[in-house]
Amino acid sequence: MRVMPCIVIPIYNHKDEIPSTLAGLLVHGHRVLIVDDGSDVATQEVLAGLERQHASQVRVLRHAQNGGKGAAVMTGLRAAREAGFTHALQIDADGQHEAGDVPRFIDAARAAPEAVILGQPVYDDSVPKSRLYGRYATHVWVWIETLSLDIRDSMCGFRVYPLDAVCALIDRVKLGTRMDFDIEILVRLHWRGLRFVGLPTRVVYAPDGLSHFDVLWDNVRISGCHTRLATGMVPRLPMLLGRKIWRTSSTDTSWWRMAERGSRLGMMLLALSQRILGRRVTSWWLHPIVFYFLLTGRPAREASFRYFARLNEASSVDAHVPRPGWRTAYRHMLSFAQSGLDKIAAWSGRLSMDDVEFEDRAAFNALSASGRGALIIGAHLGNLEMTRALAVTGGHARITAIVYVEHAKRFNSVLAKAHDDFGMQLVHVTNMGPATAMMMQQRIEAGELLVIVGDRVPARDSALHGRTTEAAFLGAPARFAQGPYVLAHSLGCPVYLFFCLKESGRYRLYFEPFAERVMLPRTERTERLRGYAQQYADRLEFFCRKAPYQWFNFFDFWQRPESNDKGVADGRT
Image (tube, rainbow, N blue to C red; front, side, top):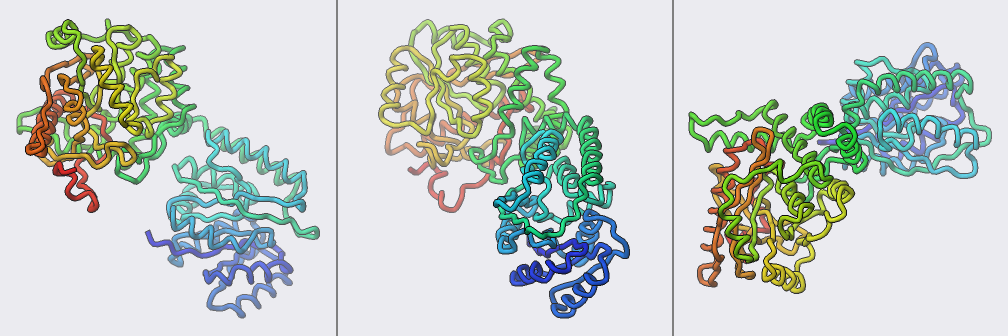
């Protein structure tokens, strides 16, 4: 998005301060809109002179009567948008703000054009202590009304607004027109899902500075504003809680760079609700949360659309496969959220092996009877982590999981709180080296099971980065990790596939042989890797058709390799 900024200055009788304030702003080369909010004649004359002097850069708008700072700012924002600007930097006329910071604020707007850029005041000794400490009452209320700390300072008059979003709000909602405006517009923009970026900026109070803050009536107005906002927050509570649990994803389509959509506090609240109210009641909380996630999580939503479109294209005409769309994406994301609750329940001891059943235990029983270790390849399909929890907490099998946890730290911390053994038997792929390889070999020889997933390319910061090969998956080529097959080759152990699907309210386990031993002779390495990857992709596709809502890779799985990865995706290392 091309950012076209201007500067908006509301003014009321600051005739002495405006010349120096304007001089500090004009050097940055931006168009300036000054909104005279019914000032006295002397101020009008000063403004008229400044407009004549800087006719190419300054425009003065005038209210016949004083309507309040908020009214003046709204007039300026509307005029800026009508003039074709995309963003407006609001700054007070009294010279308190550091005009030299304008480039920093504009650069921040260019880096995040959808965000509100907020000044975070850095005060010196000139600030009146009553003003300094009095602001915190409003800050706390704003943090309550948004259920967040995103808005660090809601009263600073130095900020950049994205005009489309702001004008849509002020044209639709009646906002306070005086000192309450700065507070209310930020809270309501937060409710609408806008991002906030805070920038420290110096604020100076001149000893003889003119202030229009009415200690009595402006405090009354601000109190009324918080009453309105607190009341309006109540029906928005599910949405706000949803944001605490799932935050907007990163625009980076690489799965390991996607921001974890949840706060630890929000996840802990769900875990607490499940412990006190039970799984069924807590599950109902997921509906508004997932609905919010669906609306705001564009990358994940589009990934769901893409997945179901490919699933349909790869299926026969008569096959009963959900069509891509908003309802399907909602069910897809709801299934993912429910699987998270089930993981918490399993680690908390609220699920047991009685809640799952094997489709066919023959392969698992034979492996257990042999006493041999094995490599188990799973997927982000169904609930692999839940079965690990049941195995660990119930002592049914010795399992070591090979995982990448950097993108899900908060959720994993909640699971760790649920059971002391969560962090045991975990091998992080970022730490794989000779010592780790020796440890895994020892565990295999001791009859343990190593579990790894095969349906994501290695993370860029992992030891396995770059080792991928292509296989046909749902009618199109996709990259799959070589890691499971290279690891199986080095360990010399049997390999099995394992999937855990939720069917009719219960979990069903599918455990099947994959290879007695993976062989990768040097002369046939590339072709063998392709063969193993395709064998895995075929089985993954089968289970995706069987449980289409339970494949939880919410990113572009079919994304082509980057230019600097050429030669990697075909199996060369």
